[in-house]
Amino acid sequence: MGKKLTLNVDGKELTKKDLKERFDKYNAMYFDGKLGKCQFFWMSPYGGTFGKYALWQNKRGVISNIGVGRNVYWTEDTLRELLVHEMIHMYTRTIEGVRFDGVLGHGRRFRSHCKRLKRDYGLIITKHGKNFKLKDKTFKKPQLWEKILFWLIDR
Ligand SMILES: [Zn+2]
Figure 1 (cartoon, rainbow, N blue to C red):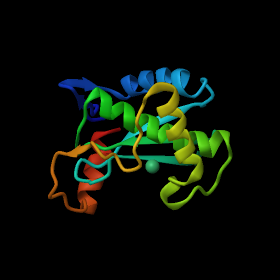
Figure 2 (cartoon, rainbow, N blue to C red):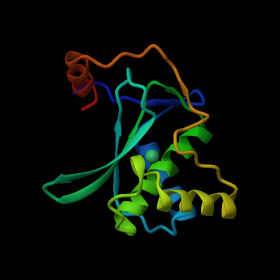
Figure 3 (spheres, rainbow, N blue to C red):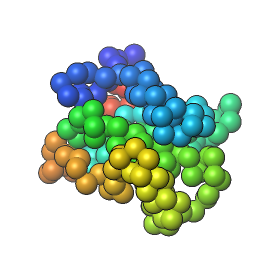
Figure 4 (cartoon, helix red, strand yellow):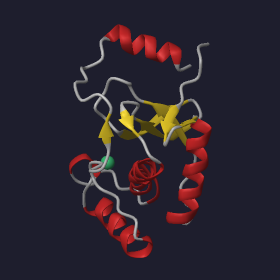
């Protein structure tokens, strides 16, 4: 199908494979390598969302997915914050088995991981991507045709 989408990070174009490499590295560094398999998806280039964690059911079972926003100026640091943020959601959900952790999943368990990462590694993870910058702040909700086109391009 169409050309593979990439993500511009510090002027470099990253693929999903590059995200996976970072995921594996951060899993080993910050989560004792306990996190399982994860897939990645690109989010709408029109949206105001930085990222998302979702568990999807398919034929082979339940699998974790991390979505990365495309309407964002990414740097290696903000991308790490985003990935680790979503990985905390993955950890509380799949390793600790917490189904509900406060509003948008940023409750007690989530915050305790933020504290741990700050204490042990000096890594600051915010709840809503405080330092992230949207490329287009006048974004609109994508129309259905835009969603379909985006889905076709990214297959
Ligand atoms: Zn979150």
